[in-house]
Image 1 (cartoon, rainbow, N blue to C red):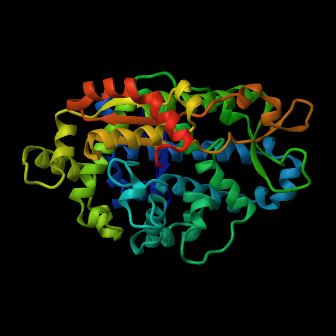
Image 2: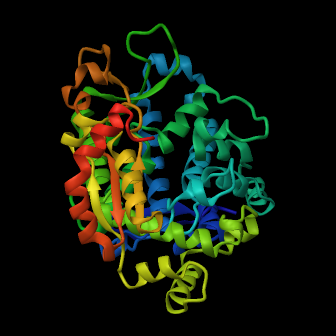
Image 3: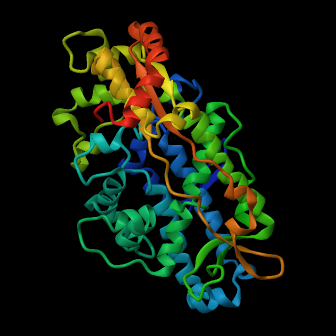
Length: 445
């Protein structure tokens, strides 16, 4: 039977187009569940328009993955070096198979997400589990595997798994798996890569649109048109990398700047963070054993809808588990910011956040204080750039902008609003003394 083609309107990409095979995946239970998972957790309590879901993001990632693949494999963009590394790139059947795998992997990359997405995932899943591991298990499930085998051509389940999560998470799987080929690593980089992953491209564009901010916008069409498969700069290695022609470097800079601004202004917004903390506190009390169930049927049965009902019930009933945290979310009685990282405190003591949070908890009680810290991640991605004279150069050597992009920080102390005035007065009076004593070892760490 010939494939039919479909399209849906999208506020970011105008249209998302897909064929009947992809539509079957879109209509599957794991994908339809994403219609009920907020893309930005509880951010709509700060940015009222940010009510978009993981479902439309997944469609957008599939759309962008197809566009990037078509650019990278177009005959005009495949140099002799690329043809030497990937000799099958001229094989239409081979290319058609991997384009199909890539788009379906992009479509499925988020199906393992918990309700409200990233809220305290590490604390709310059993040790060794993550949403990536749940994604892998779902793609390998009997229901989805049967879809892959019935496709024309049939798709290998592990090909989809590898591209959906990438080498970092695939190799954490307790089952022994084959190593990534250069081709598989390159294709997974299209979806989840640190520099040009279309997952990041779509969520920056989509999140900024729905949050009503401009920070996440960048020239993604120009960037995609200038992406190329390139060798590493200045090395003997033949390992192919995802890079950019020099004409797209400013768009690449804009992407990474957009990422910084979105984290600093939206994802790490202090009120958004405390609502996530209250939700985490609620879930720890409400969930059996304090964690989500990793059984796939149980996973598919729980969405934001069930949690929202539970939140409302707990907020209205003092006897329900997690009542206080639920009430704070529903009544907007969240903990208030008491302290955030300041260069003057940092000059006195590099451990200012942990030191002050322990002191505040000792003074006002641990139940009245929440400390929120996210460690700074590794450096910016270094990707190859093809200069106009044909030479390959490191992006960090070529771009002063990339070398100076800072890291967004989370280092907050929150306090119960009923104790906020006293806590602020106490903090202003004692902060410097506490930091100095802790540095000298006069306060036990």
